Length: 93
Image 1 (cartoon, one colour):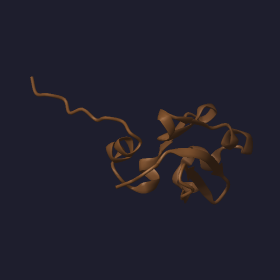
Image 2 (spheres, helix red, strand yellow):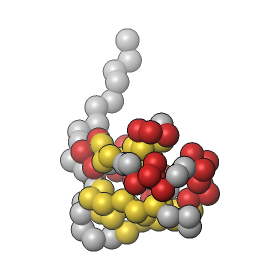
Image 3 (spheres, rainbow, N blue to C red):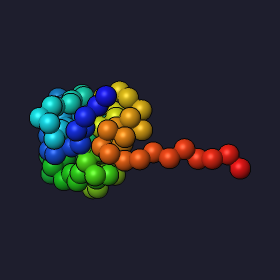
Image 4 (tube, rainbow, N blue to C red):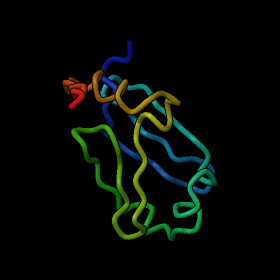
């Protein structure tokens, strides 16, 4: 089970995109994994917002969005459930 997998801080440089989670863990992936962040200026990289109650980060000036699930390599629902969201299954008509 993933616990406290919500973002509290973000760091981006030429080598890595790093999310710092509420429990102190750090998740990283190569900056080159995001064409937009790789090509972004330092100012654009530092213009980020934590969204989705801490489950993803957006960089509005370059229209980039990266979720915790991407860095963990797990389905989005897994992170949302760990963050305390209730996932409802759609019922068949």
